[in-house]
Image (cartoon, rainbow, N blue to C red; front, side, top):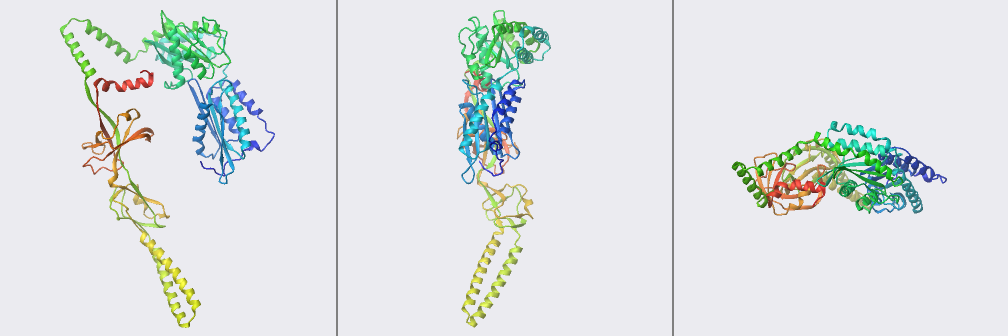
Length: 626
């Protein structure tokens, strides 16, 4: 990372009597407010940036399913600090250990320090991390700053996990009943669940409330209060969903908190999934309540509070009474918001029952054909072909730079032209060089005449001086002659001109070494295939493929995979794995930058796998089943 002398000095250390109490008091005041998590994180980042006079500051916080990151930077701050700060905040969040990394200036003296400390309460795992960069002039100063940052992060952990005061749930039944009475007006079960979760969160004074339905012994998490979108693969979301499943299996309320005032009717044995959720959310108090219709659980509501505000038995009993009407409201919402896909599944089940129960020969024949088709799908095999985007690229490129300084007088090629080695590309104006060469030669001739005259006068000293001047001018003449030869810029190889707006170079004054034209080696053209992450394991060198370009879709060509990269690369804002193949024979008209599609023959696969693998892979990624 570059260290510059333009970074601001640290005013914190200019005043020796500056005390940390103002910082801690300000952080504590943030915790007493009712601002949401994101606003609290922003306020703490601003306080730390101001108090430490930091060039850049980053605060990352994750509690349950809520993840918040905020950064503060001074005007003119070096953006190169952003990546080290993100890495430092993640490192202390995972390890729970603080550290300071000192960066020296060009003279080896301390100049800057990256301070990082975890956001964690005593005896609890980290819930976030803070990283900042500020000026530093000694190791002792860095140690003092790190101690202050650690104390500030401990105070921030308290401020970020405090919640608004709890309300008496016994007086909120009427408000929640109004939500139930409008169950049929909601557009989907998700909107209905979101209204219930937000209502419970506000009325019971919780940091977070979530709701999910139970279908075929599996919990479908519908919403989490405060989140517009549920990232189902997030560890926090998975812990909530798994805890809901534990509650649905037991069929009674489950509470997990560091409190021993519960009797066996509520606490019972330890429930490992709820304990994991509690510990992962900063030793919070968590609870799950089932919604029972008849003898089965149809939904689960989960709640979370800070560690300092445990659930009471009366609160859980009241919450259970509040959500009891959900047992009747959920079927109403499901029927009112039933999707086309759900109706299709129901129709399919009725069709199967109709075929099996019928005694008609026509229906039995249809059933037999369906059985044959199902058998073929189960045991048959087909060709598995993977279609991926492909682009023609040049593996080797040569950049032609200006050999001398001057104005470009002529351009002999255009973008896309094929050139041969030694072919003229550009010419640099040589009029100044020719004039300079004429002057040098005239001066040499004058000195030679003087040298001959001196020889007749027998003046060795003057002759020696004249001879040295002639030698100096001869060296200058050789240099000018060499520059004249370099003024004609030629192609280094046979290839294709790739540079854009080559014609626009005419008239430009270029310094020595400025890149002018890029020439692609014509023998190095190949196909670059972009495979998505999920299909890279199917690609092997030597597999056959067929390529068709967007420019001439009527022409196809065959090739073989030559190389498959083992590292992902970014293309068009997407991370993909790259594979390479030679240009198909007979398609010499292809040029770098042309796009197309490649169909790769991977091999034989079962018919049922070909028909279902995309759906199964998506389900595994979203629902985590084997």
